[in-house]
Amino acid sequence: MSEFRMPALGADMEAGTLAEWHVKVGDRVKSGDIVAVVETQKGAIEVEIFLDGVVSELLVGEGQRVPVGTVLAEVNGTGAAQPAPAPPIAVAETVAGAPPAPPAPQPSQQAAEPVLSRALATPSGPPAPAGARLRVTPAARRRAAAIHVELSNLKGTGVDGAIRLADVEAAARRPAPAPPAKKGLDLAEMRKAIAAAMARSKREIPHYYLAETVDLSPAMEWLERFNLERPPPERILPAVLFLKASALALREWPQFNGAYENGAFTAAPAVHVGWAIALRGGGLIAPAIRDADQRPLSDLMAAMRDLVERARRGGLRSSELTSPTVTVTNVGDRGAETVTGIIYPPQVALVGFGRAALRPWVVDGRVEPRMLVSLSLAADHRVTDGHIGGLFLASIARRLQEPKSL
Amino acid sequence: MTDAEIRALILQLICDIAPEADPATARDQDDIREAFDLDSMDFVNLVTAIHKRTKINIPESDYNKIFVLKNAVAYLRDALTRV
Image (cartoon, rainbow over all chains, first blue to last red; front, side):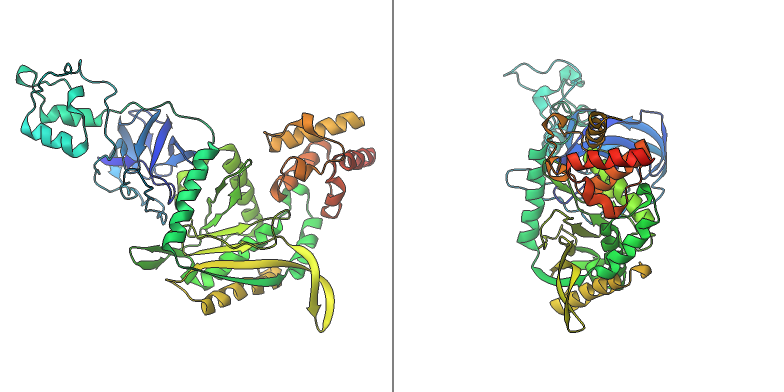
């Protein structure tokens, strides 16, 4: 028996609402299947399972809000076919007044105690009247206290209606009532999530910042020729060059690609770039473009187009939110000149590209109009220093001078 | 297509890309990127959608000719006569 748990879909996520099941008891599932939609502060996310087997029980009902780590379903089968995408963003932020969240789930993880008190949606019978003395076995009382089950809501099945341990266990497995799942994006909730993650970042991560002006002219001239030969659906944006140059530089400098957790940095085995996407009306999300260092430009453009559309329409997948190993942001052609980023914990770096614009630049002793962009780095001083950060930025800049190599 | 039909088509394609856009608020002199909060990805998607619907292939060097709504209508009107 394996357990499918509420995943942590960001540094800022404490709980999620199970908006919709895509499977029912008896359905066969395989690793990578989308089995549910979870409503988070950052919108509705399609959640994948990383188990093979048959769904034996759905433990949380649609519309129910539960903490990260709560067992949502049980699956009979071969157990974990493969590990879930490593969630570098695994430590849920605890905000003032909120209950602590359990660690991020792993497929093989044993059941964690539910944190929120469970009110009972479907008690097995009428609850004890107010003021009546409850008959409860000691084991049941201890267990109820441990997992926050309200005894007065239970009907005992023991002698003279005594509440037994089995009654408490059964109650704990029943879904708690919750407000109906809210579809769509709640910008106020997203703002809270961003605030929690960014406050944690500023509180915990000793940032340092570097910036460099990059002559984009070679890249833009190459891109113009590339796009000239292609119809609109096959054209690529300058942002794709920024993404690929950053990803290749991250492969060269792995100190900026990974997670800092429990007092140590762990370099990620792959470059999964979290691409920052601004949402209409406000809000921001940075889903992963996986293996960005290994994919051709046209493939990255397609991935970026798909992610932007799904981020704004709704339909991102859980693995896309848990797998970024670094973040790259590009403010685009209507944005500001420079970006001073805030690292998304537990990542250790954020690469920023400002607005590219034609500006005066000295080339071979002469001032010429060149397309320039401000390239910036926000990095974690617990892991790297400014010297190596400068070399990393220089690596990105050099790659943008050689667009054919991207 | 008449200018009014071209204008309606452009606004419809913008609404497909940015569903919260209100075409009733569009003014001919507006920069559509500003009026409808279109970023560079939205804009290339608009050019792609125009290509799909009209077969007009707008080169990158002409993008600045369709930033303003009335200019976009004029550009497409002229291009349609050549398709």
